[in-house]
Each structure stands twice: as structure tokens, then as C-alpha cells.
Length: 272
Image (cartoon, rainbow, N blue to C red; front, side):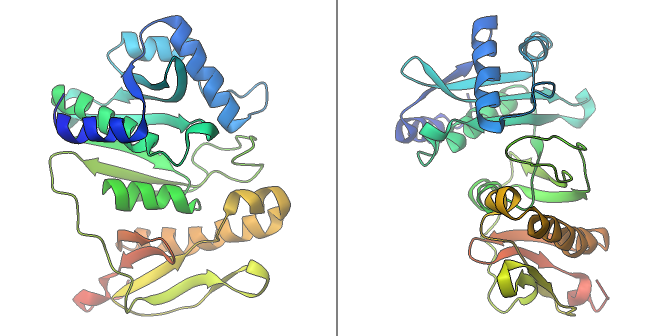
């Protein structure tokens, strides 16, 4: 595996062992873990053991992190056309009991090494653009970059994480052989979306070279306790972030205390 030093350090810090999953028992355990995390409707599992078995058999990525003999994280993905040299990471999750230990980062570095060994130079995946910790991890810790805003990408998922709202997603690309981008600063950025009275989104029109698209502190709690406010945030982020990206703006980072740092086309003398 490429970059073994970084990977070994991450695994040691997380206190896990990571390996590919090849037998049906491990894949069944991974599906049970995903069900524990997402708590979906009975007729809508995030993934099945049969599908994971097929992905692994067909040359895809299926791996898990173990704490002792207990599976605490898993991930599965499939390769793109050979010419594209890409892997799409379809699903990844970490058990609540293992969070805060950087298990997700260790698993992602395992995935990176697996991909590079096979001549793959980038990994893509989608995530909920409203979840702060995921945005921070993907954009700042890993250095992935958003390439598209996808409204209601999966349709209704009806689980404990997504609730009954639409499933907007941000598609990111992680270039494995390029240096990690410098951390973007939000200093001087014009705020176009932030929390207003009562925690509802407050949007303003601003023409600036760098803007900040804010997020709520905890969208998952909002979805459970104040679903109407959660929906308002989704629509506001769709309009602000999705609109900027559609107009050609680039998301260059994520400020943990603010939101998405977006470089518009104003810097080139054009309207975003």
C-alpha cells in the first residue's frame, strides 16, 4: 500500500485494524453496522450484503475497521470506466462508539492506498452539504474539492439521518497524487448565508470575490426537532451554494466556525 507511514500512523492513533472484507459474514456485519448508523425504514436498507459481495467480487472496494474482533467502520465503492482511473466511494460509516478517534480518516487512507495500487488517481463521493462535521472532514482534513451540487440526488431515504427531507448532495473529488490544497481562509469573505433569528437561515445578496455560505450548527437535530427549519436551511443552501457552483464559482475550503469558502468569478471582473 502506498504512503504506508501515514496510514500506519493513522491506524495506530485510531486503535483499529483495517482490512478488505471478503467473506459473507463480514459483509453481513457491515450491513448491520450501516443499519445501526442510518436506522432506515425496513424496506430501504442503505446497502445489502449481496450487493457488497458483488462489488468485492467485481473488483470494487469493500473494507472495514476492527476494534479487537468488532467491526466499527466500513466502506464500499465501485470503480469507474478504466479510462477515467476513478473510484466512487458509495457508502462509509463509523459506529457511534468509535467516533472521535479518527477511525474515518484511517479508513479513508486505506481506501487511498488501495486505489493508488490499482492505478486509480482520484476518488469521488457524495455527502450531505448541510452536515458540518462531514464538510470539515472531506474538504479540510482530506483536501477533497466539490465539483457539483446535486439536488435531491437519492430521492426520499426516510431514515434517522436524512429524515423525510429531500436528499441534496455535494459531489467531491479527491485527487490522490496531488498535494493537499492549502487551507482556505474565510478572513474578509462576505457572508451570503448565516443563521438568523430563531436559528432560521438568513440570506443576503453580495457581490464579492470570496463569499461564505454558512450552515446550521446541527442539521440532524433540526431534522428531528424542527423539520420546517431544517427544510428552510436545505433550500437556502441549495440556492446559495448550488447557485454559486452552477454559475461557475469554486468551493475552495470549509471554515469550521463559518461554512463553505467560495471563490466567485468576481475576482476576474465577472459576475458570479
